[in-house]
Image (cartoon, rainbow, N blue to C red; front, side, top):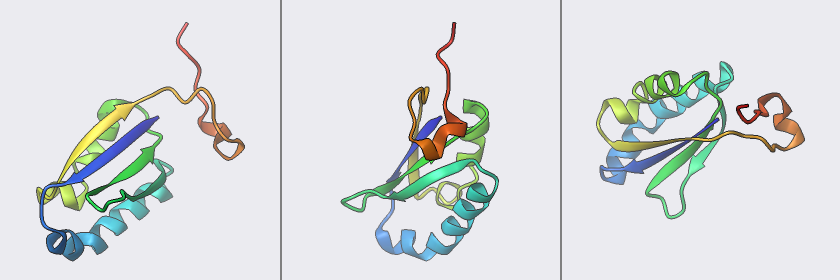
Length: 99
């Protein structure tokens, strides 16, 4: 599992102008099952996405296609973790520690 932390590097008016494209990108990855949750940070200086990807390289490839990233408006921090304890709604995403 991955935590994707976005930090805006551009003024909010540039972020807002590209927001519809970013929301469309999010929607595609919700549909394919990669994204599980997302939203703005408070204060509004970026966002957070919880992702269930096959591996780090695949998730980083997805990140590079975010319209915000393509236009150079954000920096991403990708943190991988093992989701060994999950809410019932996320049971399909529970992971095991390596042997």
